[in-house]
Length: 148
Image (cartoon, rainbow, N blue to C red; front, side):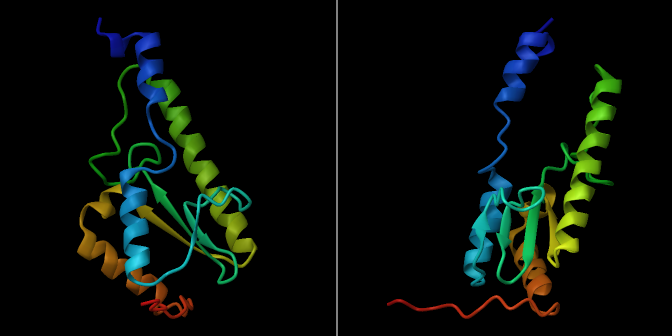
């Protein structure tokens, strides 16, 4: 049995999984800055601790990992064969928690967007999606200020 297959090995592997500052989050942050959108990171005072939010303009973005949040139809949303019942329960709980956070934010008047990890792999498509999200829905992103 490999180290990753043992309980201690699996625990060590899982402890290295980041919750914040992931590559997909960084990709979204870079594009939000490029299009002039002001936000706060990992806002713990809002339901679900959105990855990006602007309280004044009332919007929130969650950047979900395709595996952890089980992105339907995505090849990254695999299900481990070992301990399948644990993983099934874990994924159901994650999806319920996500839905509850989105409902709570919407109840507070927030516009909520979910960006999937796989969507961050194509920066041009992601930028187009972000522009589409912010402009047509009337979310006022403010004007960029040139400090030069």
